[in-house]
Image (cartoon, rainbow, N blue to C red):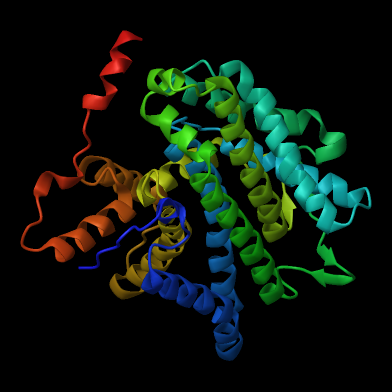
Length: 368
């Protein structure tokens, strides 16, 4: 068992708790950066494309985790903000704006749009806020069709290639360069997320999540803090949407649908609400599960000579997985890992109710 002795107030806000933790994270980052070299060696760019898609889901997952897991505001409309970022990036690129300017602006446009849309519904709580954001996601496809002069409508629109100082990057022409672009954006979002949690604003988000009345009593401006959380979350979603467009190379009004919004929320629930690691774990499940189901279907069809082309099979398996986590492990994959690690660290003094959430501090909510 490792003991961390805190000798100053900065110990609670350091990036890493101790040296070995820093070593393991740097090792994971190094393996991620050399991963394309392995795929170059085996000559398989398909798997690299799947991993790139997982990293894109991680970016939007961190944005949604900041809003839902850290601030406690449920959103079923983040696909709409991905669409805003994607189409803003396309329009700016078609207008001749360099990608290094168009891409950051697409995230800012998505963040501003998300904040403007969210301000009228910030007084809602729980399922009512989720339904309001769900309505945004439903209306997004209609707006894309209505503004077909700019978005291509039902026919869709092609996504221009990335151009950085004259070097053109395309997912199919040079997938390895596209992979590094996505990883760079992911690291920027990760660093921003980590710094927000270390800042007073991150603690204000957590205070609102735990008890709005208590947060207000401590001087937290609820409307401003919630709007800030929405803005930051939508910026990350807009960047992920722009990268998703470059990955798809062609988008329509059905690309960012309601199913994607629901999938994004379930993704962070599976990964573990309130943990940065949960965004990564959930993205791996969402990204790998369809591929695994397709491979298992092909293997079963060849091995047992049966037709497993069942409509809605992926949705059914995904729903069963979500139900299993909600019933058996509400803390998600990362929560399960924490329990396993703590069990071995404290053995034989581990207590079963150690991770049970205490409700005594939420009694102030009863006056609402």
